[in-house]
Image (cartoon, rainbow, N blue to C red; front, side):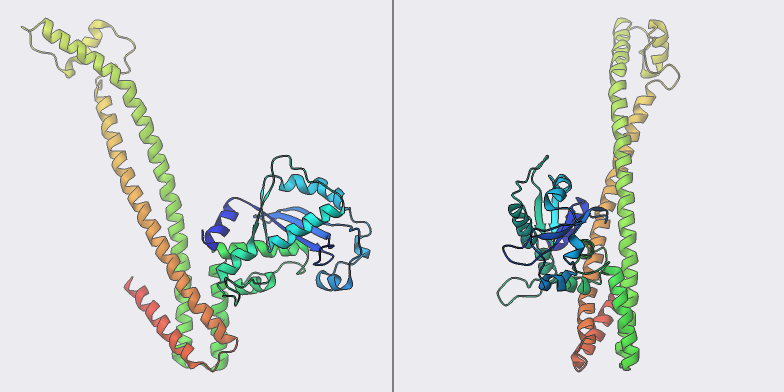
Length: 387
């Protein structure tokens, strides 16, 4: 599973997001603040916690929580009575889950608390590890380099709400990073970066072709975002129509099953009449109404001139709907392919933006970047016009 798929699953499952602030980093540290939200941003828990030990000045300098602020705060056992029922049996996503889960265990040990879950133990997953792979910066020790939460927010254009390094603010920032990984924030972030590039191009008096390349990239990304939204809307509409067609086809199938025994009975009567009276003109299905009148069958589902034609029409209708269903499903698959192509093109444009951002941050002397940007923008423009 890719980091993007992982983030999309977290949002789809409405996982919980947790963050803590503590008295330090060591083995004797304990929790002084804890917050839990869901993926809609709803606050499920947000409270200070009165610790057994004092908060050192080094920790106060990071999160700003002082000993005086905790005088009237609930103790950890009091918080646990609300905290554990919330997370019981749920999937919990934490930015650096190894640290926060260790502090949960340490705080429990300090207060001699044994955890009890009414539904089941929660599952903890780490957003920091997923984001490291998503961002893709290689580490000298192998694998991917971990990014601080504030750095991840800056890299993805996530606006930090509240005070950084406070539990609730960090929960909301983690949610923003998860949404960015899932692809929900990309269009707005791209547009904002391109606005900055356009402004920088004007201030720095870039060569006109480079400035035009940035403007054209902005137009393409905006158009691409519109295409993706249209494709998503079309995919939802097609899915709903397919469901309606399947439901209608099932009703027609049940109707045919209901009519079949009657048709078989009537045809057997016709055949018996033809065999019994061979000297008379043979009966056909068109004579069914006369036969029905003679045998006085009151429970037949038809009693007018349409008779068995209703059964044949039902068969024809279900065949038409099946053909229409097949066509819609083919259209649905084509939409899926187009949506994937649009997403791949957006990723290509994101790579262009990444290099452009790097250029803004200090690679001003690297003229090769301008050449690359011009070439990439020209290529994308050509593809867009061909399409």
